[in-house]
Image (cartoon, rainbow over all chains, first blue to last red; front, side, top):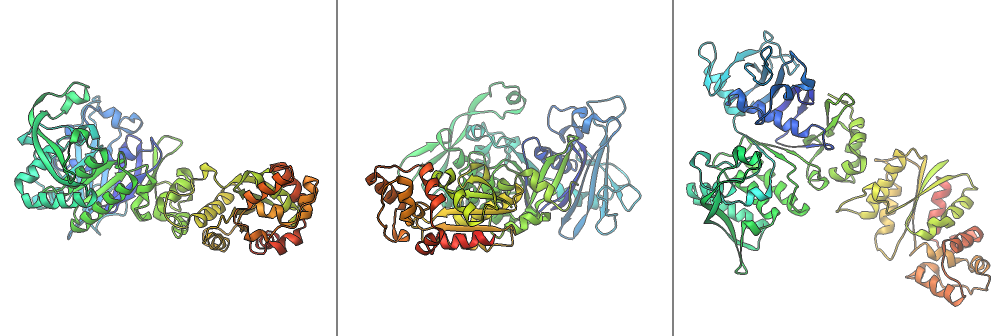
Length: 392
Length: 190
């Protein structure tokens, strides 16, 4: 689990560090850097098993990623992580080669065992840090401790970022053997994921169904039916091109009243809840699940069911971590202050982060109000100013 | 002393409550009114004791706006726990220590307007008989409307304000011991 995360020079994240919990929420106004934090976390995790050109969001150029386009600066990502007995600080840094703006080719990874490094998250080499190297999925020959590299990779590999889009969750999918047990960022691939779980372990699928029926008791069964489907979106979706059609599978819900609803006609809440359950019932759930605004399309009460479900899952899978961004006070009511960080833009357009646990006003008001109530009543600015820690 | 006064209805906000407060404090208060239902306050979105939370939220709001005190008056409206909720907020000091006077009119502020029939008589220009125990009238607003109709008058903010300026506060305290007497004692102590 990542217990602390730091970023330098990534977009508006000029220099931040924040404590993380197994389930953590980022709050703050629009354009306060929440999404950038998720992207930076994803980049850090991907740095252990992906080539540089796949670490950052598709189609970006380096100068767009760098804080204020500052020439000569390095993008730095750092985390304290604990994975069983294995603990320490991993740092990933990349620097653009001179005169090249759209390629990242220089990279450096270091590891500082817990208790041996300086308190500063960003440790300079030679201060207890060991250089470790990941290039693509291979180790650089010579000099690197393969056990150490394996441990770091094992602790950070497997990140999934979601920005659910109910329209994409609904779509039937042309089955693709190369994408088993995966959904893309929008949730496209849900039908295939379910089909993969069913094919691999019927009992696991039954457990998923049972949990789903507890939330939606009107549903009698989840069926995967052959129908006209769509190919994985990839670049053509980003370009606004129509998806290619073919034969595949879609989702259908059989109801107790005898009716059935195809996914195309099902509610957003039904599909989103199913998407969460599917993630949690994968044979190998992602190590780090990042979700942007999970409240979209879900009734506030149902949202609490989803949170309960996620907490239950985390209690059974302590190696998984979930980080959400949210604008929903109803969702925030389900969190404790130490599980929430407020993001805010400063006058120089850089992002500052403020843990709610350090805010005396929040602690006092919790005797009467839920966290979401306090947040909406006090406002982002007042909360940020009230923190003892100030901008970090 | 600059205080925030929070009220529910339009009649008390139309000058009547300010008149009563001015008389209770010998004009020492500098008052600004707001409505309990002000949507900008983001009171709550669900669970818990609604009026307790509303009252505590207004304590915070008064502090945020820089007031030296808060006066909050709400109607009981036959609610079994509203007085207890407001009393609890009156005694809440963990979240806010701002001086406050919070109370509940039984069953509504309108009862105070017909509690002293002499003041009401003066305001409408006709003799008004002594009314039944004001705090035992279930629907004071309706009762007052009917009474005024019989007298050829109608309820208005101006009439409420007129009565408030002439009302005998001692009579009001005696006739409304659970509502006005508690409110008056808390306002004088603020």
